[in-house]
Image (cartoon, rainbow, N blue to C red; front, side, top):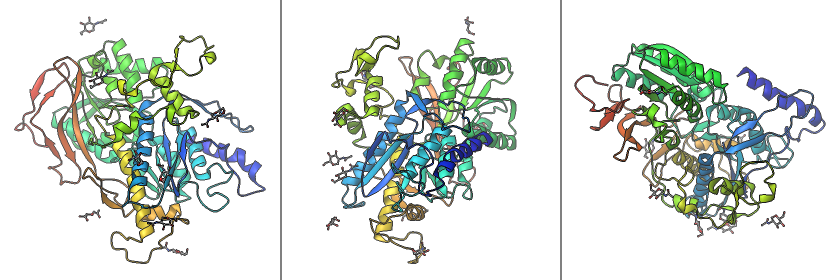
Length: 527
Ligand SMILES: *[C@@H]1O[C@H](CO)[C@@H](O)[C@H](O)[C@H]1NC(C)=O
Ligand SMILES: *[C@@H]1O[C@H](CO)[C@@H](O)[C@H](O)[C@H]1NC(C)=O
Ligand SMILES: *[C@@H]1O[C@H](CO)[C@@H](O)[C@H](O)[C@H]1NC(C)=O
Ligand SMILES: *[C@@H]1O[C@H](CO)[C@@H](O)[C@H](O)[C@H]1NC(C)=O
Ligand SMILES: *[C@@H]1O[C@H](CO)[C@@H](O)[C@H](O)[C@H]1NC(C)=O
Ligand SMILES: *[C@@H]1O[C@H](CO)[C@@H](O)[C@H](O)[C@H]1NC(C)=O
Ligand SMILES: *[C@@H]1O[C@H](CO)[C@@H](O)[C@H](O)[C@H]1NC(C)=O
Ligand SMILES: *[C@@H]1O[C@H](CO)[C@@H](O)[C@H](O)[C@H]1NC(C)=O
């Protein structure tokens, strides 16, 4: 975190001097949204549309060079489009915010804290050169959905908190974000790792694995999640043989060393509190070192990621167990996603890049002087229906359902604000608003009290820390008859139930590492 604050102060410092004469000036160069539409109210979005960023070291005497992001992440393009889908649905609704149009501004946080800082500034400033509020006194957005990782979300919430702009994350699970003093305007539609870490500890104990190894992502997600797991595991009498930390961009030698530690250790169970990006590199190194036969226990970031479960890769992870959030169905979303493409807005760079990545083609072949493999030219009429990837896949809507719920939560709070609907019996001493003078701070206050039901029947509300109730599915990696890995739900966890009743196991066979199938016995142990 210290490094982070140096960066933050750096950015503020560089531009502070320049902007001193006028208070109403921007902090960084304005970054433009990748997708946007105007409306009566505006919701901001921050997603990891790309996952790699070039961060040149900052010299504190010069304007930092623009950040460049590369390596498109189709999963987050899917999240961004799910946000737009929800906004359109509400825009079309005659009962929720009738006659009010909702606009959006979606930015790329690049999965980086530095970039997220820029995005937070851009979301607060809009395209005008102002700080916190536009010169007319209005914040550019009324709420922000994002980001897709804990570290970026922490940076964004810190930056926007002072301006009372609510941030609602669909993916940031760090228990640290439940601290209301530090993050007074933060909410999320994904449960805090406070619960997941405890559930994992009980899981490990339940199966009698009292001697385990631990690997974590060396970021807010992994470090906090693992710290809570270690504490909870200690109370359950589980001992940790080793505890290693990696990042996806760690040097290869470090990843190799960690895999050697795992291979040499005497514990046969590895608890991996890592993001899918760390799992990618860990898995490749484990394959290179022929590390198989271990029982992996994982966190929700990677436990249902198809990319990790290919035939080749599942040699390492077969039989893996871990918790994930419940899945849902969103009628109409698939049809909406299949309409996405450059035809919607031929000059939009995001849509063009999305098309090029999806169909391995180029719109402008003359730019192709980088020596890379030559690619065919995109026609723009390629068919998305024929593609199966993390953008088009709507069979397992988990995190995208959280994006969907987050947008609805914002819409309900604005609806309540405009109709003077007061929740939780706080009486009439709050201010209502008309649609031309909605302040983010008002949306924030009404967000605390939302309590509504989605079309799917799910109830959405936040506790006093901005957290939803914690329910998980216990997933197990099994092989189907064709030999492909499938994720099977073998149990459930509901943190709102009393201790002892929180777990329930389905009567379904569990596959263990090495692929032996056994029905879990109830009599040995109780949760
Ligand atoms: C919302 O509806 C209005 C009026 O029908 C339309 O002009 C606007 O483009 C819509 N906005 C979105 C985000 O769909
Ligand atoms: C909103 O309404 C428009 C016009 O009727 C329709 O084309 C569009 O598909 C609707 N969007 C959603 C998300 O329901
Ligand atoms: C919708 O908004 C317009 C413009 O503000 C207003 O004239 C009209 O009466 C509104 N209609 C409803 C049904 O509220
Ligand atoms: C990998 O491990 C398997 C099973 O332990 C063994 O049969 C195989 O020979 C090993 N391969 C290499 C390249 O070490
Ligand atoms: C797209 O960009 C070209 C060239 O910059 C411009 O001539 C054209 O009007 C733009 N089209 C749209 C739909 O904005
Ligand atoms: C995509 O997945 C569906 C369902 O799993 C399958 O029927 C279809 O053949 C796949 N399409 C391609 C192009 O792989
Ligand atoms: C209501 O608005 C007034 C004036 O803008 C303000 O002083 C007061 O604090 C607000 N009350 C609440 C509960 O937000
Ligand atoms: C939400 O509303 C439902 C139904 O009105 C109610 O039973 C429940 O207690 C409410 N939950 C909270 C946290 O207010």
